[in-house]
Length: 73
Image 1: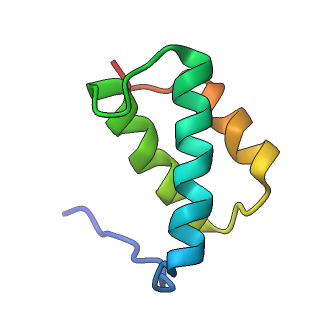
Image 2: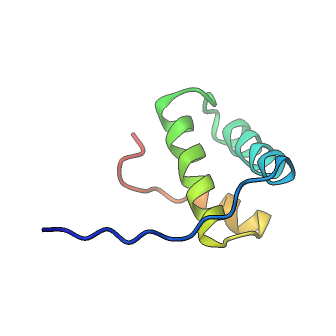
């Protein structure tokens, strides 16, 4: 049986959502990726996950979005 670790999450404020939206928009423009494509949606989810895990630096988040990760196709 597999156990699941649940990390406590803070609610995302409108300020945080605007911050993340700006990063996602910038990455999509740079990567020539539609925001609503499979890749764009996968990166948006990953962005929220990294933010909830504690990554708050804009440049670090942009760097993480630029890295290839499994399941992003």
